[in-house]
Image (tube, rainbow, N blue to C red):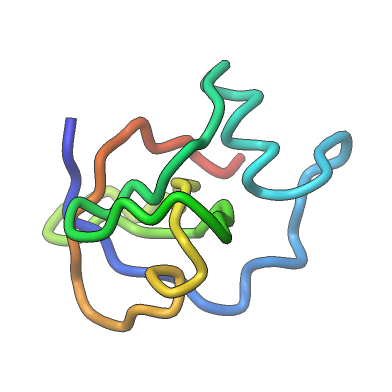
Length: 89
């Protein structure tokens, strides 16, 4: 499934206990290994992070984690990613 999202800023220091990174959080919650950037127009295979995003055009104000490369994690535009999105609790 794809989602239109926008990056959130200033969220990296809120990592839940028991996880080594936000990417580790995404991998453990989905039981998948992040092997590429989930931005539809990128697909870089290195320098991946667990990025905080918010859905665009939705009444859902939740924050989500999705694997992105460092470059896509810096984007300020709205863009499309492949899920799964993992909610930040």
